[in-house]
Length: 558
Image (cartoon, rainbow, N blue to C red; front, side, top):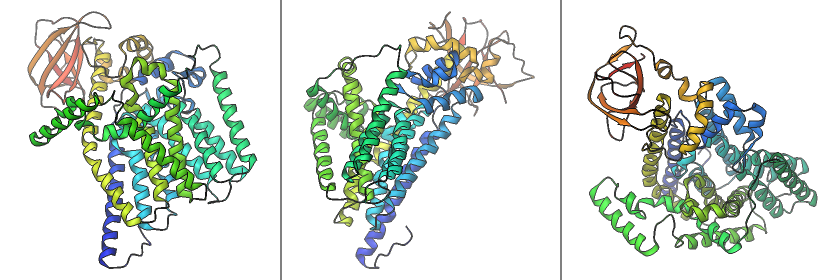
């Protein structure tokens, strides 16, 4: 905030207070997002199991280049493969790379927004960018290492590409800058399918900058070449034919854009979530509001209204800002417009490519995995508007109100992220022991896929199979060599097992700060692993085989 020249009047003091609040909130949101990324589970979750299984069993180059569910993730797969080969897929590398990519995206955005002359508009624009990238509505991406690598590589390429095209301010871009932006579009497209939408953003920006025909030709040919290359790489792979139902897909797109609003007010729209609001007065109010919403619009994840209205307002806002930009706009304004058009194109791709899927699973239209993109739509619109706002004092107050209003959602989305992390950790322990109870909550991990890929992962000695605790299973444990941990309140229940013979689920209490404990039967053989269970309190673990008739003991490896 250096270089701010604000008169020392009552108005000046108010502006300084607003600036301090804006930067304070921006730092807070970034810090919380980085904390969520750092606390991501160090085990596979959801798609991560499939990635590991393929990487552990197939040739390196073919797996890096292969298409998976419509996505080409060449660079992200290279990072994942390297981590598997060198670091036993312990997720540390992906966590670090994801954090670096997010910070690089924020740095790129700031390099453009810093030219805004008015300090309050500059601070407000950066706060909006931070909200778009770091709000915990994106916890599905922020909280899982394999998601951060592809998502924030795409956001970095998109923002860098737009910045390159606008590097001359309001002047048309050079051919060299266009070629660089086109290359970044290719990288984005081969990092995740959403990255293909980067070309929509680049073409819109080039059009608004009144670029020469050669610029459009370079971008268009690069887009065509990218599509052809993606199709060629799918040779021999059966892919679903695209279906076109314009009205249905427009309906999906408009409702998809409302995703951030849905999660921002989630507890007052979903009766099941409202029942978990912590304090009685707030819970009573939330339950009343959720019931009212449910009676008026139906289940929030399936409702058409007011989601459609929100989407229509967003499209109208984008059309208005874009129309004004044809007369000229600043480099920050161009960045915001590019981000918004990119996100809109992603939504269009989702609506077209997943039409049949949403017919079968209508609740997935607003799934959290899409929020990382739909959030950018609204952030980009706000940045484009702020870049040329005529009354900066008013707009910074609006942005502050929005940022402050989103703070409660940070709490419940963090809790949601914790629940996903707990599911990932308990699943990994059950897998390490080899006893996966059919009633165990697996979250987004498909049991059939888990069963399919486990032999390859175990054969590679990766992920939980690289734990020292796993290596001890089946061997004798001597207290003179390990540290015995006193346990109490032991509860043992027999469970069925998706992976083989029945086993046991073990719950107990122990005063230990270890991350994992080895469970040993009365005969001295290690047959299980347990971890802390924050939800129920105490510890939770699984053991192989039937109960041995003697006390179960716990040992730590330190």
